[in-house]
Image 1 (cartoon, one colour):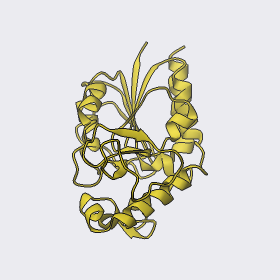
Image 2 (cartoon, one colour):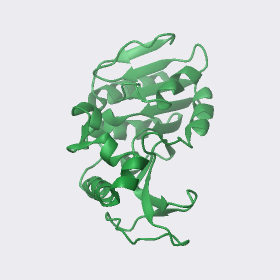
Image 3 (cartoon, one colour):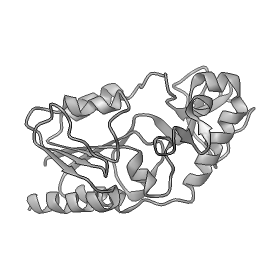
Amino acid sequence: MKKIVVLTGAGISAESGLRTFRESNGLWEEHRVEDVATYEAWQRNQQLVLDFYNQRRKQLYYVKPNAGHMALVELEKKFDVQIITQNVDDLHEQAGSSRVLHLHGELKKVRSTIDEHLVYELNGWELKKGDLCEKGSQLRPHIVWFGEAVPMIEPAIEISAEADIFIVIGTSLNVYPAAGLVYYVKSGTPVYLVDPHAEMLQGIQNLTVFRETAGTGVPKLVNQLMKSAL
């Protein structure tokens, strides 16, 4: 069974109604990224950061996977599919994808501020000051903030290098290190890029571009790949 590795970005979540800061003048729901998505922001104004992620988490309970998410689940009928996502929502899991690696953390999880290995599922959408881990420290969003290391990048590199087919969906490939994963794909591997603002990637052979949104482009690509697997 051929292995398909899929890298997804904010574009696929945006179609479900989740806003992205890169499409709103560097603002994330009217906040500067530096004020809500860095460790310095957490040190400076913990309540603002908690409120910001609480609102994003609350919103996640009112959105649903779109046609792009659902199409990727179909691929599992004929292929070994691994999704690597830059997104912190759980829309891939809601759709039914069985293997999802989150590069930048998960919105519905929280972790200890003194032990990054203590990660918990949050019950509900609200994380408050005074919510502590088992070691007695304040819990923080389980999110990789700007300027922090990306612990899951090494596993993601290994997975990308194993791909027989590599698909990139809904990302401008401007955020590193995630954007560099496509360059770990074996030479000659078919690469598909689905994004309405897609640009050709230097040094990537066998590249096919779908300049469409995830909701329309991914079902077309999946249909094409499913037919090829017959």
